[in-house]
Amino acid sequence: MVKTFGMAAEYNIPMPHYHSVVWIDHQKAGVWQFTATEQTHTAVHAHDQHQRVHSRKSTHGGHKSPADQRFFDDVAKALEGTHEILLIGPAQTKHEFAAFLNAKHAPLGRAVVAVETADHPTDAEVLAYARRHFPALDRIGPGA
Image 1 (tube, one colour):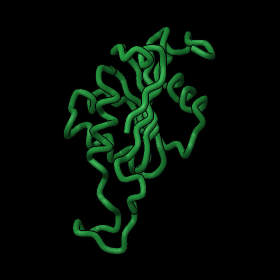
Image 2 (cartoon, one colour):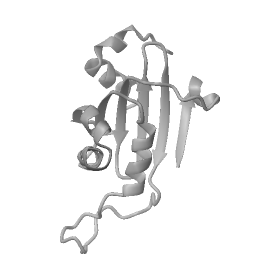
Image 3 (cartoon, one colour):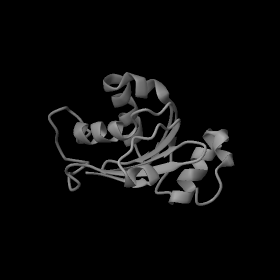
Image 4 (cartoon, helix red, strand yellow):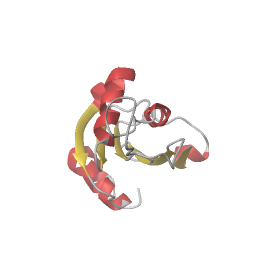
């Protein structure tokens, strides 16, 4: 399930974004996309939000369930048109998503500029991550 918030979302107008920051875990992702004057936020939820992430036995030999490819595809769709991507989140999902982008959405995979650990930041903390990695965004004031 995908929900988009922001000026362009209200009218379903595609808006080109240069920078994106994604907070992702195995159940949900938040995608913030920025230009110098606008921003949108898209929430993407895994198709099976109640799936077990860890299992006692698995067919692929490990103890972790495989990533939800449809969920990753939905997050990738939310990133279309972006030029630079910062991936943040807890555990390994952010790395699995980066590998998925490289394998299935190569232009987006090449756009990943950093992958960092972040537990469960507030929206303001996510935006601070973005501003640190994308200095041009410092011009965006509060509430932009």
